[in-house]
Length: 128
Image 1 (cartoon, rainbow, N blue to C red):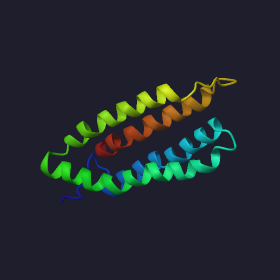
Image 2 (image 1 turned 45 degrees about the vertical axis):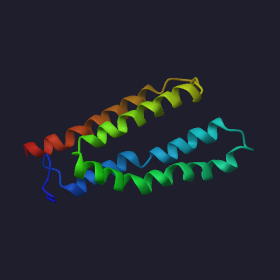
Image 3 (image 1 turned 135 degrees about the vertical axis):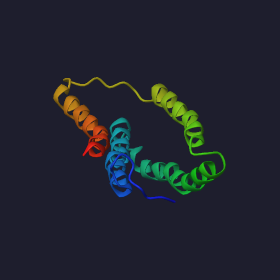
Image 4 (image 1 turned 180 degrees about the horizontal axis):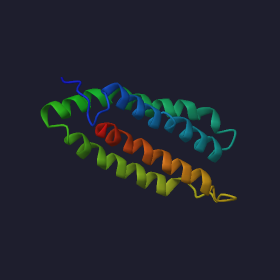
């Protein structure tokens, strides 16, 4: 398998960017759950998160490898899209809406600009 750079960014750099972007997802989801649940129900949330997360971590690479080997790498997206849609439906149904006291416009704007910068980085590196 080739380890050639895509858009001027080496594979290790792409994995570092992906890890930096996806790393905060589990702590953020834990914070949301801790905020939603009463103190009595919080004690089992670590067990529930582990029970839901570990099967995905252990079965994801073999399933993804099999799909990309025998069905083409595009099939991974066809496999994951129904799961993502199901997740969005569950979040819409069960996550209660919480009103913020004030709109964090500055935080949202800086986050958006940072994500745009990270997405443009490979394209700009290819131009150099």
